[in-house]
Image 1 (spheres, one colour):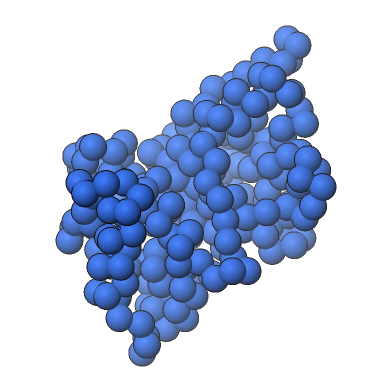
Image 2: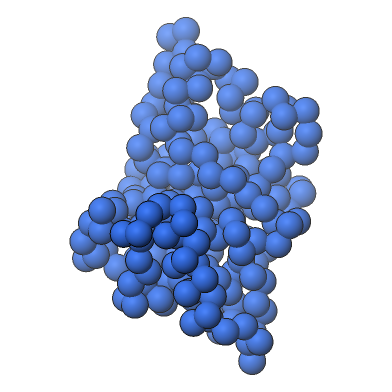
Amino acid sequence: MSHYNYQEIILWLENKGIELYGNHFKILESDHPIIYKLIAYFLKDEPTCFQYNLNFYKGILLSGPIGCGKTSLMNLMKYLSPTDHKFYLKPCRDISFEFIQDGYDVIHKYSKGKLYQSEPKTICFDDLGTENNLKYYGNECNVMAEILLSRYDIFISKNIQTHITTNLSASEIETFYGNRVRSRMRAMFNLIAYDKTIVDKR
């Protein structure tokens, strides 16, 4: 049995959301099944993770339609994460702009940790699929595909997790990034998915 009170945690998260995003922020009851899974994962609540078939050695792939609140939720989860599992969010579009400016060093920055002069870090790549294939000195590169393949290597070798938010389906991910990336993503992530019929909450 879990020793956490999930209703109290959701109230706390809602208050934190109001603090971060303003008085209009609200956690809807229809979102509770998704949020329960996220809370269980980030608190490392083993009995509840087992119940939801979540593996906390893997990262989270949070999938859902535009405007369902994926980014806001992952931002809130940072406040639940234990100190040794802290992560930060990085929009994929920002990475694509960095690639235009800095080229292939950007791939090392988000995979090998080279530009941080440190070990690789846990990152949540926000809005996978909003970036485009880009050219650097005439060479086209699928930047996020290369980063995800490198992140798989450090997941296997160092057990460093990656999280993702996206509105892409599994088949769209394969179309955009190739079957090698999709295959590795199955090993890297717990899939937590919103109902595709949810309307934009913005």
